[in-house]
Image (cartoon, rainbow, N blue to C red; front, side, top):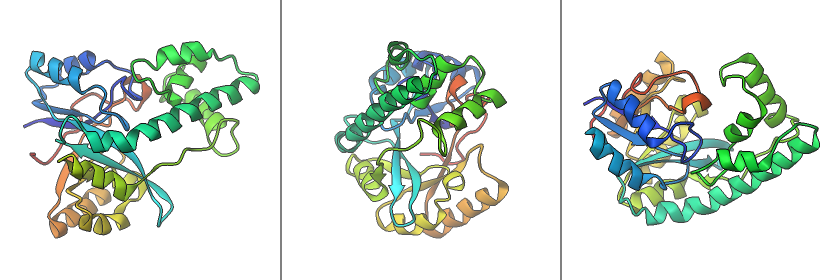
Amino acid sequence: MKADLHVHSHYSDGSDSISTVFQKAAQAGLTHISFVDHDTVAGWEEIRTVSENFGIIALPGVEISAYDFQRQRKVHVLGYNYDPTAIHIQSICQPLLERRHAHSLWQIEQIVRAGYVLDEDRVLESAKPSGTVYKQHIMKELTKDPFTSVAYQQLYKELFKGQGVASGDIEYIDVYDAVEAIKADGGLAVVAHPGQLDSYDLIVELVEAGLDGIERNHFDHTAEDSRRVEELAEQYHLLMTGGTDYHGVFGKEIDIGDIVSPSDF
């Protein structure tokens, strides 16, 4: 099995279509893939159809933007192999998508007021088929510089971080509600890139809530992160997963399949 279980598409904040991702997955020799678009399962029917054309097994996936209210920090929860109707996942994610979209529209307004040339209609068009505007869609209309460039990162920080004119954030889902929804839909709940968001202290508590796994293989993880994940997985009998966290040109320069999962589902 060669599985990239952390891929994003244009159904959230990735730049590539489902077909484009599958073409790259086939070139990389993947046998399994999971699209974990942020807080949405909208692309599943297309994913299922296209996967059959390429002969690559697609696992239902989602990445829920959650929050650890005890420690006051973000935590992302991956959901896999849930019932594709995803009734419980959609019920908690839809309000989040609406909050994100409204906040993005507010950000556009603030950026325009600050003197930047930004066409809201073009941003909305760029965000299709997601239906939710992300910062990546706004940045696409502000600069032609690549995501990894110094100029792009500097503009991003000036606008969205610290005292930036469009800084601020939305209210996220309680991490326990995220795990509960995934489990209620018959899925496997996995903490995403704990090294990136410092989610380690939360793992033990989530095990009692039904946590199934931890993401081990991620570009932000160090050797120490891998060791910590392995220890926790062994101690609490958890799956270890992994993938590229691929976003196309909206993210880090990495190819589909460069990072794969160490575990079979």
